[in-house]
Length: 221
Image 1 (spheres, rainbow, N blue to C red):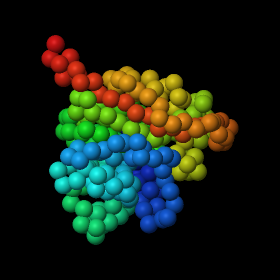
Image 2: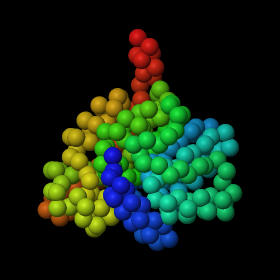
Image 3: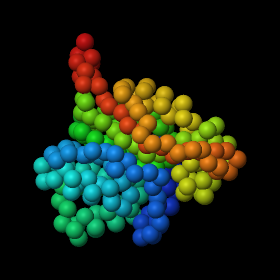
């Protein structure tokens, strides 16, 4: 879990960016999400709410979208924009990624852009994604991984954090955490070549996976 000081610092940092025109995303998970009318979707690290509101338009009045973020400033911006545009099938929630407060098996789809790398306990985040997805539900996540463990000197470096690689894990560890959470049919949709950051290299990618249909049956056995 994030420490109180880290949690407060992240909240402050991204709240200050709520009115900025800068881009905070490392990928376009929504472009590969294939959301359908009537689905329930969750956007982890929803920021200003752009992707969540796009999903709300796609799933229509019979669907619903939850945007999860820890930045009060970002959430305020997202809520005001959705109200101004009259989008009623979206709700923005202040929460850490490790415990969204959403009910078990609520979602057909979970997306996230450059957010999970910020979490102190990424395994808990993937476990949470698995928990809130319905059996047969899917995730599409764009994020950053490092080609080697990130040196400690960058872990709390403001620039490295803002560039979304300070908390990144290696490619192998990232895939292990996804599979450990219980996901199947994990596939890499797109992946960049490694590029220099500080004393290491990182890469961005978009990964997708499915919660097995048999999950509830296995729990009963």
